[in-house]
Image (cartoon, rainbow, N blue to C red; front, side, top):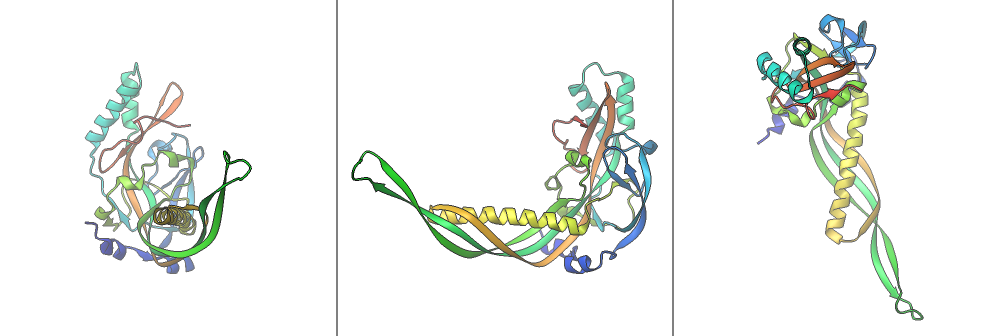
Length: 291
């Protein structure tokens, strides 16, 4: 059973953080990719190249960069990751040279990805229209039925607790290759005492922007839940659902999740291999073509 109280204790108060965006923020060095827009923190990318697209990166000094406080350690070691990488290359690309395989393995590196995680209570007051279908027979043409719907205004409330609602902190073009957070066990998170000694893909979606994305996710899920609840109880038609949502006890965590990432070029095309650093699960069909 998931200990949500433990996870909540590892989170910070959102309202306090939004009032002062310098909390836990510090000046740090970063490297910005000139091609895909990825931002790399704490460690210069290998050979001054981006781990996603292989393009050049330029140094960037970042102010008030909020350091992640929690992370998941790597479980998949280098040897295992290399075996997975070679197996995928042989299955997906024909006529590979030894040089290409060596190049692909040299480009394999450990990286951490940034995510925002929110816990919150939501209370939604909703209004909608409930419709009953009424059939009326025409006297002059009994063979034809005219279907009418009688719409009535209804209202109510719906409350739900969201635990570990996750928002990807990267909005650059590299986001499509990132694994989804539900592939990880967030209960295994550990406090981050120091800067990781591997490359970190930094966030370009700050806390305020991430919270806006989280609210859209909450609204979508609540609207769907209300519609299902109303249709299930009445069996009637439902339309025009509008929700006003109050958020209570909103807390957040910024976490780092581990992946093995390979960037290699084959016949002038750039490919990525993304391996979950905990489970060894491969993103997609294994070999992802960049653009």
